[in-house]
Length: 140
Length: 125
Image 1: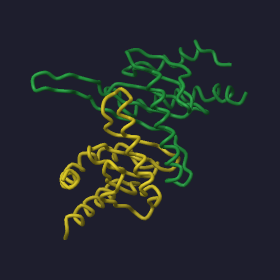
Image 2 (image 1 turned 90 degrees about the vertical axis):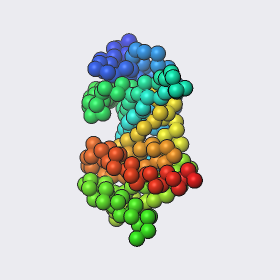
Image 3 (image 1 turned 180 degrees about the horizontal axis):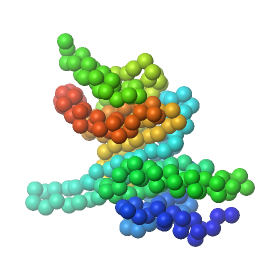
């Protein structure tokens, strides 16, 4: 049985040093747990992250001789609209990383100041910690 | 030597500059390969239109994550890693073994600029 409060607490431990939010979602894109701040639409992020995962998994499996997808990182740049005088910032730049844990996905959203290596190390550590309990839940 | 041959030679130099890098493919927004350079180790199916077209669609989806325009995507498989650079209207796909240095592959981004200048003219024409 999953304890939502404990799970959220565990996820919140990763939200330091520029990491804005951490999400746990299933392969269909449904949000299982979320911890973070800012006005991010977590449900939408979860849906898109899982959609990207399924796409890379499906086509990558064919392209790389049944190779399994382990993780992916998306780097985004700031999006602005300018009329010559004013510049409107539509979105901040940031990075999103997704990794597989048992049969679910773990997603982390960070701002640009977080180096990709640090982000990968953080999500791998969290994934290793959650692997055991989530596998137990998946098998029961 | 034609322009295409020069581009191919430049890309081949880039492949040899990073250990483990196996292929570089530059495609347009429809996933059609404009130029393709690979070593013997590169998996043949990864350079087929099916995979390349899927990456174009996925890179468009990434822009909807709420963090602005997608600049680059890095995928880690068990034995391979794939790096995409979104250089509108072109998409660069780099395929490497999992042991290759990801930082070095990503550092190649700036070296693509002179190569892309010629190709962008062709695509925009």
